[in-house]
Length: 178
Length: 250
Image (tube, helix red, strand yellow):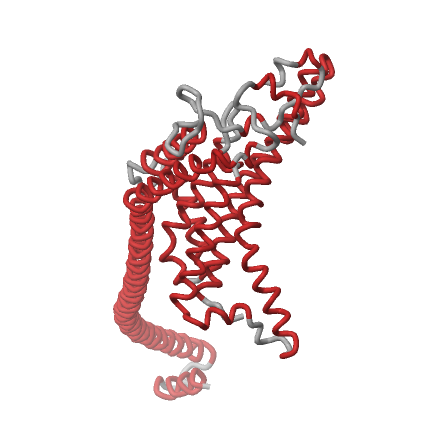
């Protein structure tokens, strides 16, 4: 694998084969590796890792807080919705009551007015009836009077002295009744 | 380097990129020398600080891009440990996260052109793997005492098979750090070497260089994937070993 011919070109520090197997460099590498690892460990364990851990924990806390807050808000929203629905139902019921009440009142007024109108109509009808009866009576009487006189005249002209006024009257009344 | 020597034909040195060099003044490399490995490990620290410390400095509830990445990595490793090793494994979260971030950042930094990949060196990965192996073994005995040896005694197997299985389990246990380290170093090294070989071809082929350049692009994409996956594999194996130490019963 290794190119041995370049040794001359590379000069004094040419390592035969793999530089990885040049044991003279091992103490140097191991020393600096240990230094590096110790420094890295101190930096990480003292500064970097606690800081990242705290940031992550803080973020977790913040997320949890936000989630809790959201949950609370959601609950509040549900409560508000329930209250709203209840208010709505109450209002609706109240409105229904008012409507029913008003309807009943109007019905009552209406019934009263109808009864009053009926009574008035009945009174007027009775009045008219008596008036009609009076008119009919007077008409009948006039007709009787006219019939009596007419009948008496007819009898007088046909058969003078045949009947007196009393019998004629009775006959007219009997015919008119019939 | 290969391109400079293109005139000489296929003069490809895919392994040169892994050489450890003294950055200040040459000479032999002592344990304290400031080498390119030192530089790139330092840059890894800088990258980690930029990403995980500077990137998260606002502590925003709604994260910025860099903070998002940091949080993502945190959550990724955290859930990995929790899923694989259980709740008790979370005590080791900072250690495992350190390993993960070092391997991940080193792998990605190594993909920058002209960079040096620290995780391509067996010395580095073997140290990481041995650290895991020794810690986990010590932890296993500390937590469970002699019961930790139950890891090697497969109680669900027929009695006659158990000694044989115990030998196999024992061998596989001690091979763990080897495979753990070579897997990482080998994957990273192979990919980088392949890219370098293709780059050498590109230098030598003239107009036909388009072919290896397309291949380099493809392999580079694969390498980005490998960089992430190997960091993941290294970490999840650490978690698996940790789980064995915490809950050794088979």
